[in-house]
Image (tube, rainbow, N blue to C red; front, side):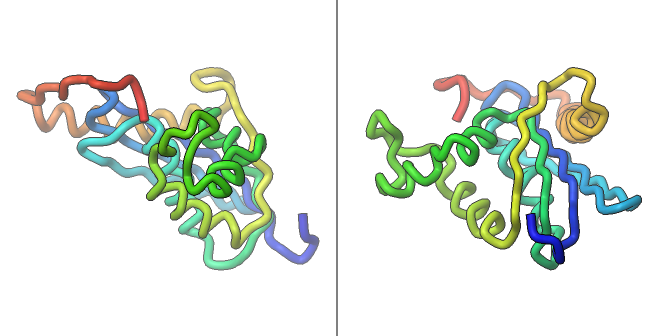
Length: 165
């Protein structure tokens, strides 16, 4: 971490009903005593996309390079950075170790642009547990989905061809 940069904590979470289906994301940014909560909704998405979108939205809020401790319950995202999956995907032209196309490449590319601006330490937290801010993010994300479902009582979930992407 660089000494002359601001230190920010970010907590994120994504939620999706029926996966794919309506999804929400939530994040909490903390700088000193200042806390900012954000959330949003996507009508047809997946849980992994919402997890990534929460991080993208949080990082997009920062207008300068920062030292960031980023907390997520998404092993998908945290491991991509902590276990160098992302470098391997890039070196293989966005292919997995099984030579399959990496899913969500559009969001990975958006996320990479933002990540390069900061010094980020990635932390995996247990979801639906005792982490106060992860629980707040989960509530924000679920709240976005629940609000939409209440407004659309005739919603029929899409046919599920895959569990997640």
